[in-house]
Image (cartoon, each protein chain N blue to C red):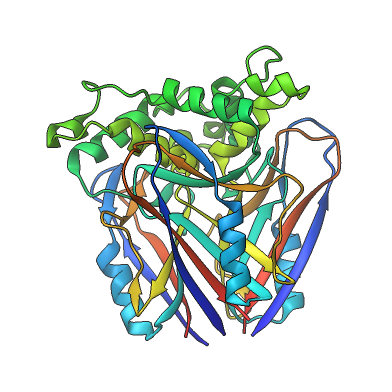
Length: 138
Length: 138
Length: 138
């Protein structure tokens, strides 16, 4: 059984940003030599998500608008801010979009439908973050 | 180590539909011969979800009403529609209900609690879609 | 290949409660002897979630307030209650916070970022529930 563990470094320029990390995950799968198995991709920080959807700019703006409406950035709204933080909204946004994806590897490749792309969604950025890529199989 | 990869074909009659696919996943697990392991079940399309909850008609109507209220079908609402699409709502609904489930296999069976059932939730149907079932174990 | 299957018993005092189960998962991983692999942790009941986020009391209250606002407990609101149940809200809350997490194991430990903690979120408690922990690896 083969394993590969990679930590992708992320540092966004904006507070909220949506990055297509599919090529970096594909690279890790290739490096692992795994032909059949699974890859887990998860945000290692709790104000960010990893999800799979379309790489279309308008859609990403729709997602961002939706999340900002349902869980708005607001200094006074969240009890979490009593600790000195200002990112209560980012924790909530992350809960809705999820922490991780698990993707099948078949024939050495990500076994994807036609439009599936892996995204890292940053909700409290402009600092160093990491994404874990764990490959497991044969 | 054993692997099995199956692609379930789906084609719903309605735009939005919720299908219990548990028997089809159980069949794949049986076919794989895996006694201990995991099975990944994911929508291969980005306007559909795979989730686990109860197979109760009223509950499914509650889910559908909730999703339609929070992310309504609306031709004018979404930037994604500038591409000619009309399914911005379906992408959002899928984000909330998730892409995939991972289920443990113990003693050759899905290791489920009393009411767990695997659903395929279609949010932009009436055309050919696929669900990936990837079994991994021994 | 090694496997371990554990069923954590849960019985909350309150209807809704958020329990940090990280030590119990760590214990299972240690017991399994797995050094490289993955652990699946899922609620076995469909009115509860397992998720990963911060163990900060104010944040948990923010989460609870958010869920209660978006999917309120209400005897009359849900079609699911025609079956005699009163927990339609709990099924919905669970959908939003998810059923499961998959965590990488590296060097015999949960491969976590600085603040990641595994939570069991109970939305219909005060009775016996279970969480499945399935460890897989070498």
